[in-house]
Image (cartoon, rainbow, N blue to C red; front, side, top):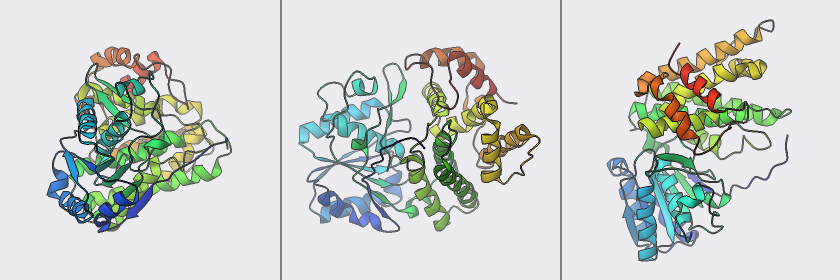
Length: 393
């Protein structure tokens, strides 16, 4: 295991009705005037907006609402939020929604303290402020893990660049309220996208070149197995509160890096998936469902034993010690089958992509730089090959 520093200061209030504590929690962490960031209206339909605003009002906390955050969140709303915060002297950002809403809130939180254009930080041309505005979250979608992570991803409309900000513990929310009940009414496709996203977050850490990481290996395997089991349950019965609860907590653990410390990580599937989202505006989970099995197939020979272990420990495949590669391939087939059972796309055509666009996607990625990937190095040719595999069997 490699040396590491791990700091995760977020307070989690988990369970049915915990959103009633929002006002108290904002006060506890120093907030006096709140920017409430929400998405496209689902938070109002499920009653979360009314519950949260009632809690803020009871705590005598004035708030301003920024709504209309879209999936694959755009920079325009970040600029709008920064302007509101500065104009009205707000001192706390509260995100009500899923990963896109939370990531927007994080970008506003540090952008309001940054003297230049917030995008300079994403582009590596500016320094992340050490004292962004404090953030709280009320999660309504189990997926991205942003409620406990040190990162955020924004798409800048100028250039259509979907990039992540440098990781910083300063971006971790001060508190996150997780009520699984709010996820029960999600459409099946949105639920499935979230399941894929959190599973991929674990895979990006699990497929490592670091030896002797037995503890975090087992943490990763437990998370992936739980996500598969709970995912199948909620697709069969969307109102299964306990399965929803397992998914909500698994999504947080998958991305707060507790199972990723002390080991090299990969993130190639995410980097390629971001290009699919940028080009076709497909859901993040959908892009990962297409890319991750193709990436696995392409890099499997780097360490077939690692993929065979994945097959055995996560999907219950029987190990063939004389043909480890056969077991490894079986695990990849099981993963693709799981994604299909969820109703996810697994080929380029299913998200409206074409092989003719592959050179343009590779060129577009070059703005961020090559190579990438920690398990296997991915350059332009390798990225193109993986996207070709995504065309289908």
